[in-house]
Each structure stands twice: as structure tokens, then as C-alpha cells.
Amino acid sequence: MDKKTVLVTGATGFIGSHFCQSAVAKGFNVIALVRDIDKAKQRLQGVLLVTSLADLPSEKIHWVVNMAGEPLVAGRWNTDRKQAFLKSRVGTTNQLFSYFKEVPEPPDVLISGSAVGYYGPYCDKLLDEASVHHESFSHYLCSEWEHSAAQFLELGTRVCYLRTGIVLGAGEGALAQMVPPFRMGLGGRIGSGKQWMPWIHIDDEIALIFHCIKRNDISGSVNGTSPNPVTNEQFSKTLGKVLSRPVIFPMPAFVAKLLFGEMAEELLLTGQRTHPRKALESGFEFNYPELAAALEQILVKY
Image (cartoon, rainbow, N blue to C red; front, side):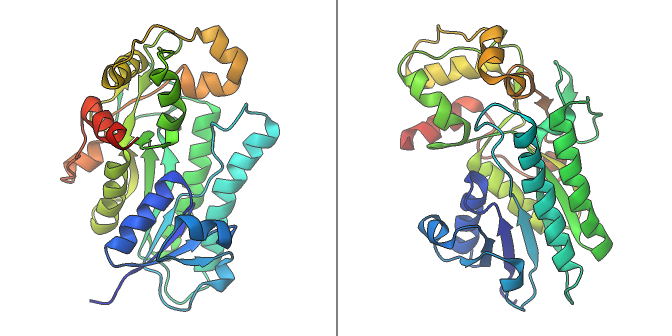
């Protein structure tokens, strides 16, 4: 069988870089659309780097893994930052569609990023891919991103919207910000601690992307989260236990709002109790379904 070629956006990010490494190791041709080739070279080995879609080789691109997007937790949200969130996600996806609708052979599969924020703020209801959403900026952002990716259906491309939760890995993502204060014994719940934290180990996230690529019967929204979400209080206690540190310094809700503004309301003080129904029904097996084992594996390397 001919070697498959995959195009990755957001390739220097947490998920994108891990996917590229895994795809290279599996023997696929990997092309990354990046802004700075010199910087990308330091992170992406064995990957063809391009800064423009016009620079793509003429060969067929079988899969597109679209993970581009400005980080949501880099600072307080304002109008300009919200526009940057949209432009980096929706704008990039629209550019991909404009390019591929002009080529002789469009991709077979598009795995396009999204997030559990699609569902908006929820309490304890268990949410699968068919659950209705609550209005919020997070829903609007994810919905617009998914709608832009849906254009690929016109080309005959199978499309999956990967609604990812909090991705856990060594030295990156959420743990990069959480572990240092917890190691110093300064960790604790945020607000009431009752808000849900849908999470996934980075290895399972990458494996799920490949699973969605491989399985022709999977399309549409796919929850990229462990089958065992936990509350913020449970997460904090488990992290403290794994690190052998006390968990006695909660962050009151008003402090979170004061420090982070709208971002606190959307990402820190509310959450989603998501269930990866499609993944499980299609036979996907999580290597790290339980939080304690996932954190123990990660923190050995941290």
C-alpha cells in the first residue's frame, strides 16, 4: 500500500506536535503548515515544513489534522483576543477549504479540532455527542469552527470534529500551570470545586485521532475525553495525592473572576461532564481511563 500523507495545522502545539511525532514513527509522510520554519524545526523532526498552502507538494494529501488555534488560557479575554481565537481557528479552516476545493483530489478525512466548550456551561448532566448546548462564547467559538470544517463535506471528505477536554501531558498543557503550585503545597480547588473537568491523557488523545482516521464509520462530533470525568475538587485531591502534597489552598470564585475575568466563568468555574460515547461504541480502548493512573504515568517524567 502506498505511504499515506497527512497535513497538520497547529503542528507545533501540544496536541499537534505529539501527533506529528507519532505519525512519523508510524511511517507516514507528515507535512506541517507552520508560521516559523526555524522554530518548528526544533520541535518537529522528520516533518516537511511549509509556511503556505501554495507550497504544498502536488501529491495527494490523504488526511488533514486541523489543530490550529490561539491558546485560550494565555491571558484575560477581550474583544481583540476573541477575534484572534476565531481567526486562528475558523480563518485557517476556511483557507484549507479554499485550497482543497481547487485540487484534483481532496483529502479522504479531516480531523478538525473543537472542544467540550461546545456544550457550554453545564452542571451534573452526562453529555454525549448528541447533547444539546448552552449558549456561551465557548459554544459560539467551537460551533463556528465546526461549521467551517463542515464545508469539506461538499468535497466528499469524511469529517470528524474532535471535542477535546483538558489534555494531560508532561510539562505542557494544563499540568504545566497546575503542577508547580501543587508541588509547593499551594494547590486547591477553584470556586466550589463541583464543576466537572473532562480530561484525557495525551497518549489517548493521539490514539483517538488515529482511530477516527482509520474508522470509516466515525464522522461528525467525537468527544475526546476519558470515560471518567472528575470534578475540580476530585482532580485537585488526586493531583495532590500523586504529588504527596496537601491540598489546602482553594481559590475562591471571586478571586478567579478578578484575576481572569470572563475566562474564569467559561473555563475555570464551569465545566462539562462529558462521555465519549462514539469512541467507546466504535471499540476504542483508553490506555488511561482513570485519572490517578494517568497522573502517575505523566508525573514520573515531569
